[in-house]
Image (cartoon, each protein chain N blue to C red):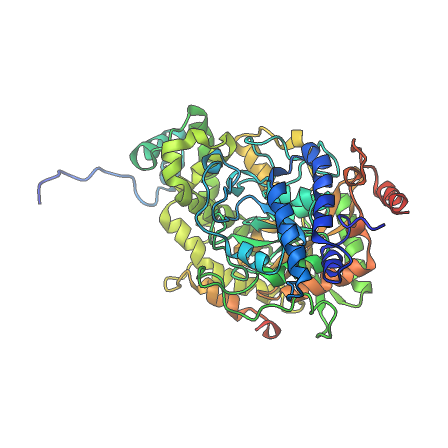
Length: 495
Length: 90
């Protein structure tokens, strides 16, 4: 008997469409599993079982009438708690928003509704999406399903955990400096930060509008393509959502296409990376070469990337401070200490410095593409430069120690937000403590198709995305183990 | 115009040591700036911590002074996104 909570989103959606699986049947299995695991992982703010069951029944009734179904019909999703739905609270990880129902619905949620997706509940996030570790003092500690004493990373912490632990088939997150890709890498799932302007941010909590993007976390690259198909495209409610050709991401995975050249980034991204990450990264690059892509080494414009990395917090903090000025002056005590501290510096940034940082983005993007993405279509880098830290290693830091921790976790991701490029992390192995490792794929603006094609070809040749953490196999205490032990245990549980 | 007296005498613009010291973010400067414009309830600990962060941000801004062109609109970034898009994605 197939456990449909374990299958990919694409396979599950196909089964529902073919009548082999009822949405209600899947809802019961999903809610059972959620009830069993959510308390260990602390990834949900709230599970709306009644609403989900009603929606699942509605989906089955609709299917029985023979009406055309959306691609995501009946599939359970849950999202970072920052996508507004009219009449419902979106807590944004904050005490300030905990009781205020929204007056509008996010464009991305409307699009997922139209595609037939169902929503299980609201997922935990770092307060106001400000922090890459996954910590939020307003909630119990959200935990990495691979090792409960390690961080899930963030800020889309609940999204990574829920998808990684196989509680939902996919999730939306937001990414300002790595907030989709870092938790996806830390929890062993695919995370796609689309090009700036690819997906509408209307009805999504803003953090830094110059840098924010909305995108999916999913079990496979194909699943991410399905979700991107559903949410991408221009939106009259969001002037920053650019009107470029969209759709067809899933169909592009297997169809005929131009041969792609893949570049291994040399410099900046691979500086001082942990030896275990280097080993997995090099193994993944070799495998991508064996999949038929022409591999080349590409020297990075290191000085440009260092400047972009330094300018990223300048833009992010100035914009976040502007968003929060009113409530920080009046209600700072309602903010978590860490987030309030993170906001402070933004109030002291001179307007001229902020505008200068925005003025150089265009030339930085042109120069980076000319240097790094002219002789290849997709660049490969490690997603995280360091191994996933423990909760203890990242909690309670102050001053420069805190800044160094944030910079360490986001070094390889935040520069991509500054450049507005699409990037995706794909699982590529485990470290010796049993924590996942991710490889980051980067492409030119609006070339998500190339990212997805390379990632999908890689997943067809590898098994990393098929591995489940012990908690998802019903093993309560997680001590993980080595990469080899994880593979053996997963194989045993399947048979 | 009213007579405001002689302008205070400042060190020469070539006196880099003076200006680098005087323009450096210090807890005192952060406190005065906060009281004058920002108006947050900053604790003493934060007043001590913030200069490190402000110096980093200031250095980031300084690093691109030479790169910033007078006649570029920040919206140039959107043009660059479209210009750098591969033909197949259009």
